[in-house]
Length: 163
Image 1 (tube, rainbow, N blue to C red):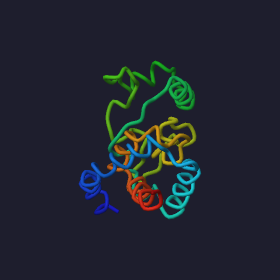
Image 2 (tube, rainbow, N blue to C red):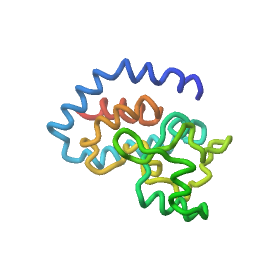
Image 3 (tube, rainbow, N blue to C red):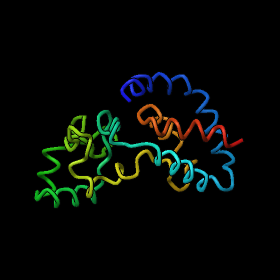
Image 4 (cartoon, helix red, strand yellow):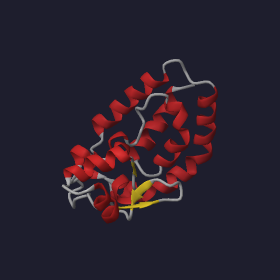
């Protein structure tokens, strides 16, 4: 897995132009059953992929934290929301709450999430390959293929299946 992760940014960079063109076409004229096809590709890939062998998303990027996320997680940790914010979060250039640092403070050495049941929505939905209106998040998907081997494989398979 580590070899695959080491090579992933370069593989994603090599496919960047091709992916941009593909997603541009997809955005202009999304296939009729795109969301259904994406759901199938997502399920197929994640029936073979164990995120616990990777956790690259938790090690290299941080999610956005919504106010709901902050309320839910701080309650779980028995903290006041402001305590949670002060301890773990910062405001980024887009004025969003994000982690102060990566890897995520809640990532255990065995790649398990210490707050899995209350994790941020952005984490529970990552890599967003089964999202409704998938064609509308092409920029996010192009970023995610450089982070997530499963997302990379899903996009490559998608390009084979869709005209």
